[in-house]
Length: 450
Image (cartoon, rainbow, N blue to C red; front, side, top):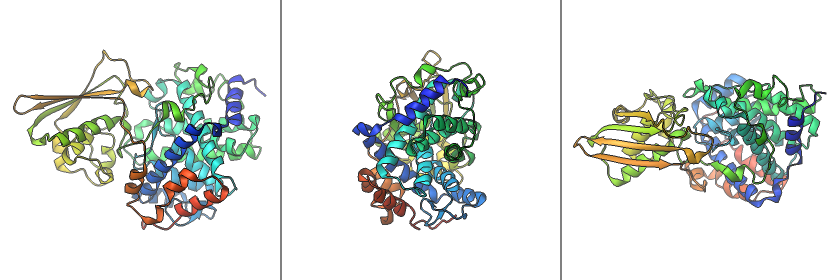
């Protein structure tokens, strides 16, 4: 076996983790799970979730639930469909160390496994924390060029995060975990060029499915390289472009847990995170009574790299509009809020695009390039009015919600079939509690079936 000190240390950290000793980590994890389930229940009825399910054969028999579909399928299929549903609305959480979306990958992989093997709810929550820690640490170690050169970290790092969560839950050995992580890493893929297309949320599904498959293969004795972090042609060699920071992989692991600090951002708006500052500014100015018809021009100023994910300026439909700050700001200013129906697959409204066409962007090249630290984010908004006056606003950091209870109610349209879920997630502990959650999620409460 190859000498693999980095991979072994990473696997050992995953295997020996015990986040249950940290009440803050567990409480935060339960809150994040509620947020994810809100997104997945809403996303289960999306037209493209149905397309995906039919295309990959979600009618296959099995015990793993399809969220909101009232039936079950095989675990690998459930993992990809549920992860897709959680990400399709772009309403799910983000983590700065990942520069992507961890929960929509990790929780579907875990839910697919617990449907066929008995685990407690406490075990699932703890393994989710560990999977997120692994995904975030890998994100820190890979450096900034991975994302900037075109990879979508939700997909590329998510495979490893999901595999880490599964191996922790199943109490795999260090050796087996190292193999599973390598099998996950060899399936890492996903390009940012898919932003604005159905393929973007499919990245989350790919990662959940691949991570689960990697862990199952390793458990079955399937072979793979045990040194994916150490090999001269390994993960960092392929994906870091010389920007790797290997000392961040395991140093001070869990002290604090990444889910606690820097923590997750639970989205306040159903669109790309990078557009949220201008969304908040739009809502603020709506409340202040700014009349859109008085606006001549709108300019957003970003630090270098801060709008890398905002790849659309002139969207044609709501899906593309999730990645357009011009649209997001205009919709927020006009309507005073951003709803799910602002970002569905219908053509964008002319009234919103009429305002968005007056918006543009620039970059402050004197500002530090945006890093994984969300505190380095800022947007400066400069509005020129037709009467010659101006309006200037600045937003630093990212907006978010701390309690997703109202978000859950809105995302599930207040459906009483799901009303018990938030309180259950906050208190669940036993295998019976987890079975109850699966039953609630598996109700046939959404009419748009796969």
